[in-house]
Image (cartoon, rainbow, N blue to C red; front, side):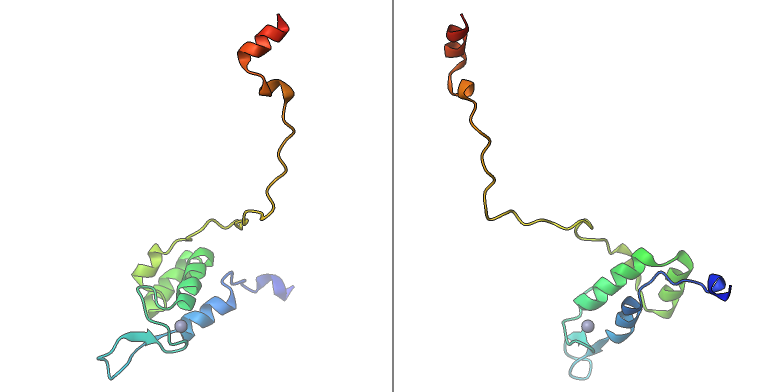
Length: 121
Ligand SMILES: [Zn+2]
């Protein structure tokens, strides 16, 4: 029954690995722009895009104590705490290239209201 007592870490491993791997470094002895040490992408407010998505997922899956520990160790910055999902989680559907078949035209709708009233009279 040892398995039950094993604490389950809800944070995916790749998110934690990405947070470790993608670190900023200064080109040209600290005079150049800050870039990601791992993928070379420009370092923005939340790092490169890989780090940003890892940080975002970390914030969504982690517990409060883990978050505090990550803040202390510098894996997460206070700026990252404001990261939010940009798009809703549901998948967006592309509009179909084939237009939907038009509903059958109601023959009564083709007639104007006044004509309809005349027919009914
Ligand atoms: Zn990176």
